[in-house]
Structures are given as C-alpha cells and as structure tokens.
Image (cartoon, rainbow over all chains, first blue to last red; front, side, top):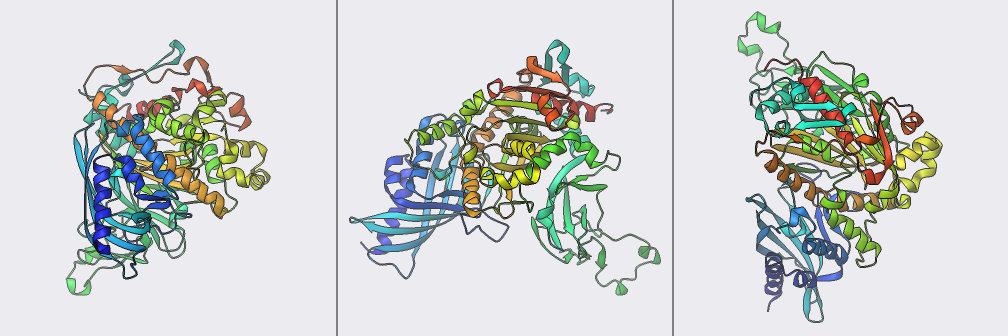
Amino acid sequence: MTLLAAASDLLAREGLYLDERRWDDWLALYCEDCTFWAPSWLDEEVQSNDPERQISLFYFSSRAGLEDRVWRIRSGQAPSLVPIPRTTHLIANPVLDDCATGDAMVVRSAWTCHIYTLRNRTQHVFFGRYEHHLVRLGGDWRIQHKKITLMNDFVPAMLDVFCV
Amino acid sequence: MRFRDAAHYVRDDPDRGVFRVHRDLFSDEALFELELQHIFEGGWVYVCAEFQVARPNDFYCTKVGRRSVIVSRDEGGKLHCFYNTCRHRGATICHVERGNKKYHVCDYHGWTYDSSGRNFDIKDRKEGAYPDSFDDCDHDLIPVAKFEGYAGLLFVSLKADVASLEDYLGDARTFIDLAMKQGPDGMEFVPGRTNYTFNGNWKLQIDNGMDAYHLTSTHRSFVNTINRREAGQSSNQQANSQNIPSRFALESGMFNFENGHAVIWSDQPDLEKLPLFGAIDEVRARVGKIRAKWMLRGCNLTIFPNLQIADSTSLILRTILPLAVDRTEMTMYSMAPVGEALELRTRRIRQHEDFFNITGMATPDDTVIYEDCQNGLSVGADDWLQCFERGMAALKPGADAHARELGLSPVASMSGRYAVQNEVCYHSAYREWVRRLSGIAA
C-alpha cells in the first residue's frame, strides 16, 4: 500500500468508527500521548494557535481526554447524548506533506459531518479541514496529533467530539 | 392570548410563601415583542467590555435587542456607540465583529465616517447638485440614547429616560467588582470565544445561570467524570476541575437586588484548584481579606437582562441575545487577570473547556435541556411554574450577615448550606419583568 493509500484508509476508518459508535476501535487509532485539538476562531480570519494561552473548542493533551468523552457518551447520563445523535462523516481530498516517510507522515483532508439529532428531529452539517500527524507503531499507523478546523463555528445547541 | 396587566403573569406573594410565573412568559410571541421593546430596547443592556476596544480606532459590533450597534474608540481615546447603519440609504456600515479602523466606509455609495461617528466624506458631494438645505442636515452616524460604563463593562440604553447606569446596577456593582478586580492590572478575555444558539426562550438562560439545583441531574455526567478522575479511574488530569457535590455541605446563599439583578454564592471545596488561589497573596494585599474571601467563592451573577458573570468552575462572562420567543444566541468568554502566570492561565483554560465550552461536558446539556423546556412550555397549558419556591422558608427581607459583611442592602437574602440549591434567586428577574411591562397598553 502506498503512503497515501495507508493515510486515506486510516482517515476513512476513523469516520467509520465514529459513525458506527465503535468507540474502542476509534480510541485505538490514537497514540496514548496524542494531542487532539480543534482551535477556536479569534475573529473572521484568524484561528487560535496556542492552546496554552487561548481557548480551543477541544484540546486534549493525551488520549485520556478522549477516553473521558467516550465514557460520557456511553454513560447515558448526558441529556445532549441521549439518544446519541446519528452522524455520517465524509472525508475527502487527502494530500500528503512532502516530508512523509515510512514511519511518519502528515496528511491534510477535507471533512463534513452530517448530524441528525433525534431529540428534536433537526439536522445540521459541520464542515472543515483535518490535519492528521500519523506515526507507524509496530506496523500499524496511529494518530499522534489531530488538528480539526471547524469552518462553521456558530454552534446550534451542542457539539461533541464525534460531530467533527 | 391577549396581553393583560403584567402583574397577571407573576404571582408574587412571599408572605404567603407563593411565587409563581405563568408559562406564557416563555411561549407567547406577543409577550416576547413587548420584552424586546420595553426591556432590551427600553433600558440598560450590556454591550461589551472596555478592554475589547482598548486602542484608538478599535471597534466592536453587537446587537441591542434587534438593533445593530458599533462601539468605537475615537482617535483621542473617547468611546462612542452608534447604530450600525449609514445615514444615506441605511446600509449596514460594519460587517465584522471587531477590528481597528480610522474610517468606516459604506460599501453601497461610499459615504465615510470616522471612528467618532462623524461624517467625513459624502462621495462626489460637490458634483451632486444638492440643495442648500442638505448642508443643514446632520450626516453623522446616529448615536444611541445612553452609553455608560461601570468597572470596564459598557452598557447602552436605546431609551433616554432611564436611571443612571450606577443606579440601575445598584448593589450588584459589588459583585461586578469582585469579578473585574481580580487582577492587579485589570481583566481580559482569554482569546477565543464560543458562540452558540438554542431553540428556547432567553429567560431559560437567565434562570439556569444561577441554578444550583440542576447540577447533579443535568450535569451528572460531568459530576461523575470528576469523581472518576479523583478515584483514579480516569488519568485525564489536565483540567483539575472542581468537584461540585463537595459543595453541598458548604456555606452558600443568594441576594435579590433591585432592577432584576441577583447572585448566588457558595464556598468552593477545592481552593487550591482555583487559578486565582495561585495569586491570592497579591489579591489579599490589594483588596483586603474579606473581598479576597469573596473572590474565591463561587458567585453566579445575573445583570438583567443580558449579562451573566459566573465564577464557579471557571470565570466566564456570557451575553444573552433573544432572537425569537423560542430562539436565543449566546456568546461566552473566559475572563482572566491580565498578566496571569502561564501555568495558572493554562489551567483556567482547561477548566473552561472542560465545563463551560459549548463543546465541553456541561453547557451542551444545558442548551439541549432548554430546548426540552421550550417544547414543554409550548404545549399551551394555562399554568404557573413551580420553580421559585425552593429556599423560600429561609428567605429574609433585606440584608443578612453576609450582605452586611460586604456593606450591601439587597431586597432579600438567603443563606444556608449549598444543599438548599435555592430557586428564590430567580425572583428578581420576574419582578423586574413585571415592573418594565406594567402600564403598557397592549
């Protein structure tokens, strides 16, 4: 498999696992010391670029942050997640950075996430761009760093980790 | 339903232990129209913080009720607020939330205004064969009726005949001070706000912003996430958020102020988790022991009708913008002392994201519940809500010992353990609602 094919496969699997709520499979795509980051917009043009000094939509400095969110989704204790909104991710246009090697690569892509909220029968589409930093661990590609740019950050009522 | 006297909608009789609000307040479109006219466009409304327009020519665009306004600092440093509309054809002058501009040029016919709102240029004026009378016209941007600030927060009234801002805020000013004076060099918003909507009435947010009673049900998943972290079942330690149920045995209370304002307060279980605690020696030396104690307390303040400052799991400032009887837009900022040490700042940010972000583990559960409430409140039952009497048996007219400690004269006080989870804090807003909508011919 070419590097681009391997990257595309991982991106598609991430969308699949989220949409099928295979949360453990989703978490297993991430390195334990990963970072998961969705910057906020500072104004019409500029995104936040420093999670230590600026608010992010999501910033987790390890997989434990994602694990907390998965626990919450599964808990049945969060009104915004009962029933869990249905999602479909479409991930397209993957482009590898020039520095890609057999051990590490950066892939940029475009995404949309369609969300159907059963509680009030409304639907919404979030969309944006991904930047995945992938590393090969024991033969498998894993996510070391994921940056999510959310283009439409005017949020109707809720937005969880599986909605982007 | 046809509008009757405003007092018809609120049964306010504390001597008999009764405070009830009619469901129509949340679902009647005619009442909502009256709220826009007489509350949001008929009195003081928060617009922005002074530090958002700190430099000459800085501007910030927002809405007062339905009316778009620009707050602008002129070249000389003076602040102005005018309607965001060109004098020529009425086009919107400013299309971005904030920025720095010496001149605002209308996109349509190019009329230009300076940062004080003065008309600087009417395009091709000389060639325009204008009559002499045109020169007698005022061509400047239209200023709002009233524009004043308190402790770095700026407020507008679109109606001229109102009390001064200081009189309107009254004793609630003390709690604005407790938030706005935490830093020796002032306060700032942490860059990166969140902006969201919910399909529910704006007063659902007014009440929820001071609602201690919902925490262990609506936010059960947050509470249990913190419990899991403290028990070592989660290794996510980046936020180190407060444990809410630990508050239940601690001292707490509330004050009803005049003009719709109210605050709930409580001791915090884990002072060392608070970013402010890391700078507490400086704070004590500057504001004294009593105010420093209050700054470390959890305080959720509502300044009627559109501003809430909550200092609970993190310090936030949020604004409430009603869009329709069943739709509301929110803007939320994390607020922090200028010059805060990086380690404290980063913890503050993680705590904010953990709980308050619209992508966090608490706020989305509130907004979704507001939508549930709106659906329920729209069934049209002729009934009065029962969410105003919790804590009433402990309610005292005037000041209690806690109010006296701060030199306050509230309308009423209530104190006791946090487990009371009082709902009497909501009385202020509905009394003000009656006051503002009384005597209106509908």
